[in-house]
Length: 162
Image 1 (cartoon, rainbow, N blue to C red):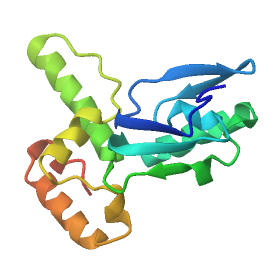
Image 2 (cartoon, rainbow, N blue to C red):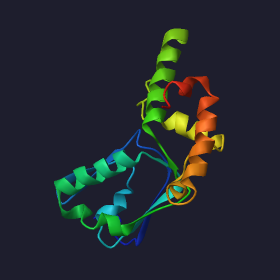
Image 3 (cartoon, helix red, strand yellow):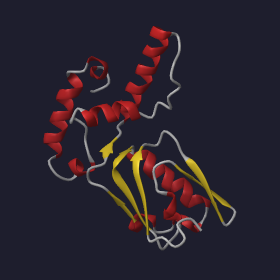
């Protein structure tokens, strides 16, 4: 089984723009954000601070995999998410689509992104304006003000923030 012999499995970077399939006991599990070793009930899985997390996507992924078999039973108790992991919001995904369209218009070609908001959220992370998991439980209002300031000062995102 995935993670056999390991007590911990870690996803340290990336987002849900790509994924992989793991087959255990003839059941195919699809992973994008969750560390694949979480299918082993003896493993504690970690999502590190380099991962950018679209929370609805995380829960959708978990639910789809729970429906496939017993491999993810109790996953909520075995997953630890870094409080420094950045959050992908729907406006990041919308911005990704707009940027892709702009590249198409300017260069006549696109990059073929998955439009999951990965580039925009890493940009906000680099600009120290993104919201992190810890911001959901600490000074959320202050964090939101910082993010709104950055968003409204960036022409591309102004139309997306309401």
